[in-house]
Image (tube, rainbow, N blue to C red; front, side, top):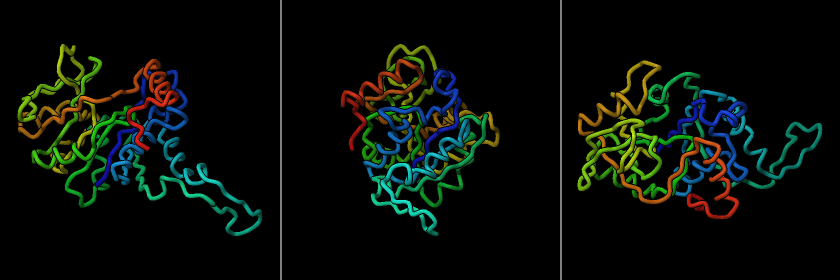
Amino acid sequence: MKVVILCGGKGTRIRELTETLPKPMIPIGGRPIIWHIMKYYSCFGFNDFVLCLGYKGDVIRNYFINYGMDNADMTITIGKSLPVVRHVKTDEDGWNVSLVETGLDSMTGARVRKIRKYIGDDENFMLTYGDGVGNVNIEALLQFHKEHGRIATVTGVHPPGRFGELEYDNQSGKVYGFNEKPQVTGGRINGGFFVFNKKVFDYLNDSDDLVLEQQPMKKLVSDDQLVVFKHDGFWQPMDTSREYGLLNDMVTNNKAPWILW
């Protein structure tokens, strides 16, 4: 099953760091935050990734193209036709990473639509943002999605009030409201860590201005095709310098709840 990661945004709320780096490449404990996200999914056995590139996508592309050489011991024999020998494999050997250009100014819904052909024959795929971490139980999330038989499952978390608030039935998990960036007074918000049936592509039009969290999600709600997986554990986006410092401090002090490796 594919894990799609949205990596194309400009990260304007943390501009002091994104002037030179795309947001997913901002380092947490010496590794890009996107590496942490991928490593987390890999701990659950998911190693097939599709990265939706946009702003400074070449930085992400070059990171993965050179990953094997940049993270392993090697011997270089000058003048030989095969000059480089890697002595140690990385733990990430075997990751399959599709690097897909989805446009500099495309919105989230457009980016998802543009990677449709990379989903292949899989009935479902996972999707998350390239700028946040959590200790969501991926196995339980996927099982929940399959049991409920809807097109979309979103992970609902408890946190800061600037993200999309979910209104849902506490017993069935059925979502009946999806309001992006309201004044949250309580309840849960959109924490990413989605699971989608590929029928979701029927909800995505050809506009580069299509925002996944707006019209498509509202239509899924009205069609009774969106449920929430409730996560009461750790979840933290990296939208500000303060949050960047917070995540780095967690890694430095060995208190990062998402690190299972």
